[in-house]
Length: 310
Image (cartoon, rainbow, N blue to C red; front, top):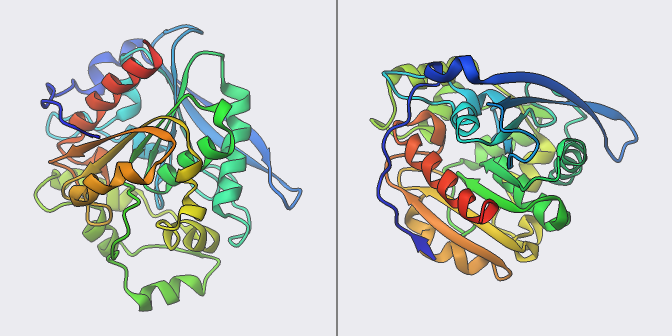
């Protein structure tokens, strides 16, 4: 099903509500199949919603960390998803996935989709309050969210994916670049590559793009390359056929990697889930950094209000 919703009003800058928002850093030790323990760091955003507040757990994309969900405002546009959702009454947890930000860095070949799923599930078991919980992912984080729901269906009540589709198509990644990346345990996208595939020309403020390129230089593991990035259209790897329950998919019209041009075929690939797909006309891949990010946020809030707060 393709959802069409009128564009919402632009949200206020996060600074307007700073006095009522709390943010706290938490560290959760997780264990991987190698028997080693690694820290996963998460930041909790809340505006006093109490223990009954529905929870959102946010999973960033490759090269990013939890700060993708808490970008600074530019030109009067709020780019902080985490603060916006906290103001809507959610308890928000923005994770640094293993290998990123302040979390632990396992060996690159060990950091696969399965390892990310195991680590996120262990974090969920510690932070869940009993209130409804949604996983919200971006790109790589979307793949992790889907696999967590497939592997541990009772741990998650709803899933939102952004910047990730499953209709097979060619990706703008050169074979030479992929071969170079595969030779290293961890690799980084050059800034010019990130700018070209993460941002749609003219759809984001130059200051927002400059901040992104100066701030996010995270490395991607070889395990993530082979089990997520190069396997994103294989149903056995993506686990979408095993997912049940409500799923919201957002695809940007100007996303260079997973454009909304493939939205019509997306829902058919989820045979057992209650899937709806939303086209976002004014965003590229890095949704939160674009001017149209508020369309994404309001749609997610409205959808979660229906499925988590019936």
